[in-house]
Length: 140
Image (cartoon, rainbow, N blue to C red; front, side, top):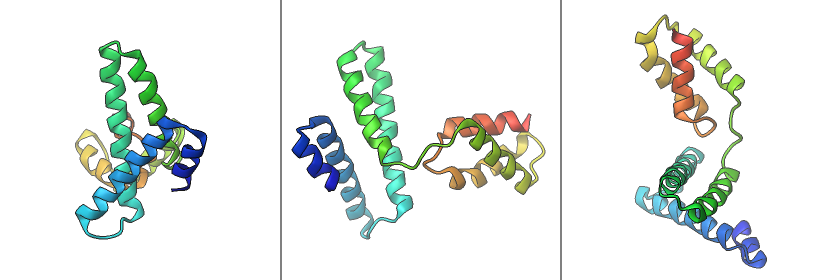
């Protein structure tokens, strides 16, 4: 709410609209679930909003709509500002290595087990594609 008020005062339409969309998504999910959202549920919604914008950027780029690409990148930056700090490649690799050791994974056949244990540890802090790529590399 404070960010929304500040965006109104600053006449920052992109931030105002983005914050309103996030707030709306959170409220819709709260109504759908019928209870107050916990941190994991909020993070899931933020991830969904982030992914939607990333997909939009890809589609707008294909359509050569640079005006929409720029605006969507600004929206993406605003959504990311509400998310936890993203893991670096090295941090992700360490978590993957530790998870593989915990499970005792030996090869590619253990990929699913590793991913199942890994995803809750990195939720909202790393992209699933990067995580699966890292797990594949470590299980080779």
